[in-house]
Length: 149
Image (cartoon, rainbow, N blue to C red; front, side, top):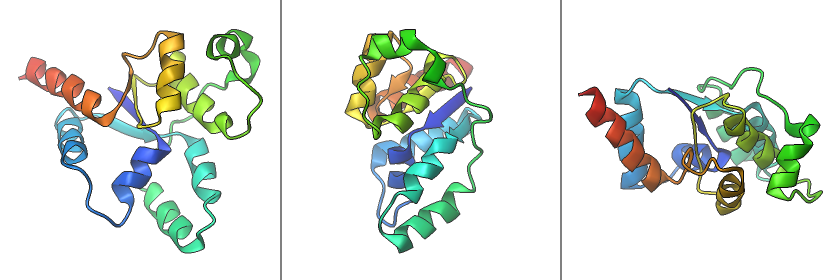
């Protein structure tokens, strides 16, 4: 199973603070399931935009430990995708849309994100069962773990 971590989950996990119990449990369950945790290549770009040079350097050093989603599909030539999500020409949505498109085109099985705008778009695309908040992901993957037992 391939699970894409949104940039916000990666940053939350790797920052210098205590992570939530749910995220701890989710990461444990994903490890037991031998899940392939991936980062979208554009997440690197998002981290590079961080104005705090020290935090940026720390995050870039940590993201290198994660495998990148190789050759992710790109939505630029898919007008249907943009029609469904009602895309406006906002530059900050570029990375989110590319990450979401990877789920839409089945390059990954799931996306874990706390970004509510991505969740709204996932509903429009009919893939909201594969774009999960941390708490939802924990429930879904615990179910997979129970099936495998």
